[in-house]
Image 1 (cartoon, rainbow, N blue to C red):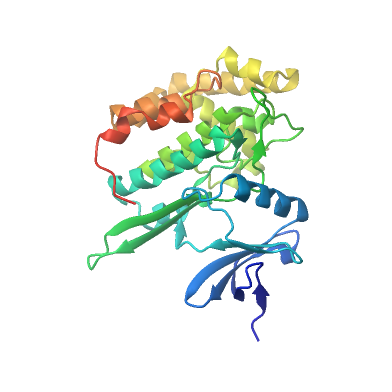
Image 2: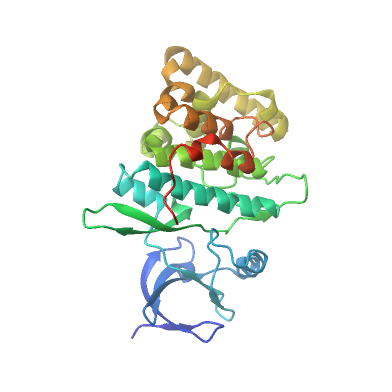
Length: 323
């Protein structure tokens, strides 16, 4: 017999398939659930995250761009979320020719979600394609129209004191989508979310082959850490490394490591200048290249703000799908 969960609202949810296993604690796995004729997602979480989620939901009540829980069960620390058909990661994998207008709709709403967070001094820290939820409809020809988009997963979201940065003893966020300062855990700010969003824009626009690493085992065989490979690759794309990044990180060991990765990147660029984003990004068009270059500036203090991103001329180049 399927297990049921009763939300604080009194609504009954029938637990279904497992959507994601939690590696350390199976009780914290994520499940699909049904209630009436609607689908939901049940997420068992730790008590600290449960409490933070209540705070976030209260602070961003009514948000259309942030996927906040719509019900909860305090005794079991379960949060109930709206169900989405897919993520941006899966959507682009399944449909790499997804039309530009649809891409822009998705990216625009992600930008608006980040803008909401930043306006209240929250940073997401884990902006990546699989945390971007997407619903769409399809016509008879299979062409998709985006109907709803939300940024989710606030497990490591953090509220900054005004003008402060987050410093941790470890890297923070997903390794593939972190900012350079996020790789060090030092000097993480709103600008770090913008950098990650810039990588998401590249991915959505067809640049996933430059960003995604599929040769983990090969790297390990040669004693190369994943973080080292990604930092060096990003410095190759967006370098050279400015003093502003080193100043932001402000840690001697990390600064030496970043300088070493930067030197390796510059040697690579001498042999393969086409690896600079300013060259391979030309295919995105001059407006997109300009916008994303501002988002991926390696100097966090010189990086575009989310407000600047959302007022960039790129958004006006084509009409967005209504959503």
